Amino acid sequence: MSTKSPALRDGSSLPGTASPWVRLLFVLIVLYCGLHLAGCGSDGTETAAGEGKNVLLIVADALRADCVGCYGAEGGVTPNIDRLAREGFLFEACRTVVPETLPSFISLLSSRHPKDHGAFSNGMTPRVQCDFVSDIFQRAGYDTAFFVSSYCLTPRFGTGQGFGFFDDELEGEVTLPQNMLIRKAPAVSDAFLDWFGAREGDQSFFAVVHYFDPHFPYVPPEDLARRFVGEGAATDAVGYDEIKAVRDVLRQADGKPDATAERFFRMYRAEISHMDREIGRVLAALEESDALDDTIVIFTADHGETFWDHDAYFSHGHEVYDSSAHIPLVVRAPGYIEEGRRSPLRLLNIDVAPTILGLVNIGVPADFQGEDLSGVFFDDDARRADGALFAEASAVAVNVPLEELRKHRPNLFNAKCIVEGPWKYIWTPHRANREELYNLADDPGEKTNLAGAAEHAERIDAMRQRLEAWAYDQSAWTGTSETIPPDVMKKLEALGY
Image (cartoon, rainbow, N blue to C red; front, top):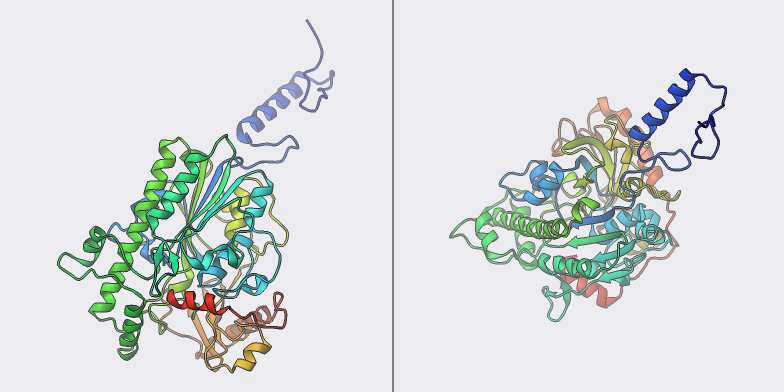
């Protein structure tokens, strides 16, 4: 019988003089590592169990978190999104860094704030060359694809970076004739499923699917319109002209909704349900092909929507209240993330890309401004290293002379905020430096402005100084304003921007 000591993985062996107890201890340690750290790499470091899985990032447009069932909405509006939450992990307090489609998407993909990538609003392109998460997945050997449903996200605005396949076959006409600006959820699902069905081999994919439907115009299928508006009630489509009219009514009524405004909100809920139905179709197709459990599914939104909560009625982009900033974020990763968990951790959509990379064990670039928070899936006490969260509005500031805008970056005077713990401080320079302070723990609807209370003066001063220092760091600014071409402006105006 051989007396040679057992070889280790690196080719070395246990000392031949080791006692039986030492040998037993060694075996127990090896067994422990093998069972407990099944993802250990050859260098001894732990690897993610999600490594090699597909990644499907589904992004809804203009979807408030509180209009999703798993975030408290009633009426069974989102059964398929709710399923993702039951089988995955829900973040209760995710916010976008900017409540407008294009800049939010660029931030989501690049893990940078608008002031640091330069696409300040719709119609602008990034001013800074930086990696997108799609670039990183592509270099890692993933098949990458993006399916968009709005003109705002077409490749002319820099969104195609890192995607081997880009589908922007828009079909819908909005306001202006012959402007193909949007497409509805079934067409987006069809495009993704056609691409998925035509793939060959076993290459993992990273795909982004964008659903525009929660954004106006509200044109849900008739069955959903009747369900949410009510049998016998008017279910006429709600276009941009109708939205403008209801805004005027809300201004005159100081934000008190009338029957028309409430009908528009119900149509919005019907559109959410329409999108959810299509998400269910995508999930069912993946499940039928045995790919769902090999796919990490992330569901989120680019921004929310303000109806009559504040004075920016039926809109987004102008303010940074949570009605347009608080977004859903749900992650389903079978076999890796324990089902049905929730976290109150406050985070931003720029944290999504590094967290996805953490899930699949791909290194996060040093210039990403967001943080890899994948550790929260295993540790309830995990926290963001930088507890201060910043966001900014995107719409062009009112009451600011054009020459001032030309001297500064376009959004310097717009509303901005900082969130630290339960406290949210909002600064709006173009409105006489208006200041607002809210305790989100006590006042999640941001109804009671505490900025005038003497007891909060010191807190306000400290938060103002930190927010101003952040805002004036103009790292993406080149000293000249970007002019949006007339053809682009025409189409953006048709979409309501």
